[in-house]
Amino acid sequence: MQDPTLLFSYEHAPDMPLRARTLVITLGGYIDAGHAQRVLDEHLLNTLPHRLVGRFDADQVFDYAGHRPQIVFDRDHFEAFRSPEIALRIVKDATGQPFLLLNGPEPSLQWERFAAAITRIIERFGVQQTIIAQGFPAPAPHTKPILVTMFGSDPTKLPIGSGLPATFQMSASFTSLLTLRLGESGHDVVGLSAHVPHYLANMEYPSGALALLKCIAKNAELDLPIGELGTRAAATDAEITNTVADHEELRDLIEQMEGQYEALANERALPVRPEDIPTADELGAEFERFLRSLEGGTG
Image (cartoon, rainbow, N blue to C red; front, side, top):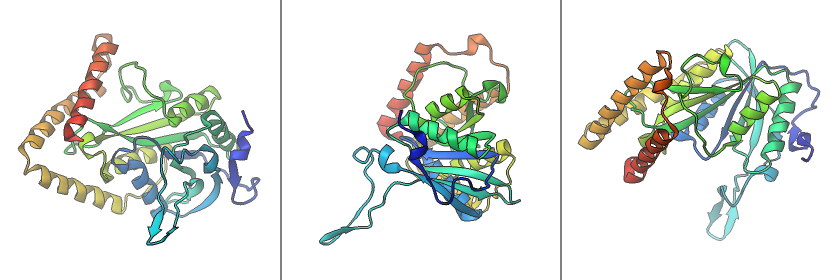
């Protein structure tokens, strides 16, 4: 592995007297349902004081051909190329307590080296807890509060019933590898995955970001103002409800999901019994049904 420290460049001297108890990571991936990560980033950086600590060398880890950045063609020339940026910032909550925020696109290359570079940053700045926030499309209704599933490097530190009562193999993301590697090196990681209604996954859905904001504040003991994000979330939900009212099929679908939501919420409040855990075949069949529903135009 090449030297991980060479992936990151400090905006100022690397020996700056900077300490932060919490690192929040919102690196976008192949899924950012409801644009939850982007909306969360914008809210934090627009409402709280912050400054740039440094940047990762995105040119080494970003797949330009797989994730085409935007560029402007103006009649007879190109301009305004939007280079990908993976940046680390120090942010202060409403009481002045600092935390680190790492955001940008998910790295496509050199995952192990990138994870090692983040580990070095965590150790340099005395980070005690890393929080990974993301949204994923789920068969959940917009008429109910957003559920947030938790994962972490040490499951014994997570609330009972906050995860999924199953074991299955899936395609890895960088943050899943990072969680594994940080845990192996003795660092505490808490992951937050907001259940964004799958029929809203491709549009901006502020309620997903709002749910993540509240969970980050609770888990990191930070004072993070809701501000206009709450107003945007309420307005978007009201607009969606009005739209759904004119479509009987959508109303029926949402009623079904409300029943599923209540069942899941009730299960989380009860101890998990072994006989309630689905088999791999049952879980696979459920995922296949969900994917078919997306292909059928409900997403």
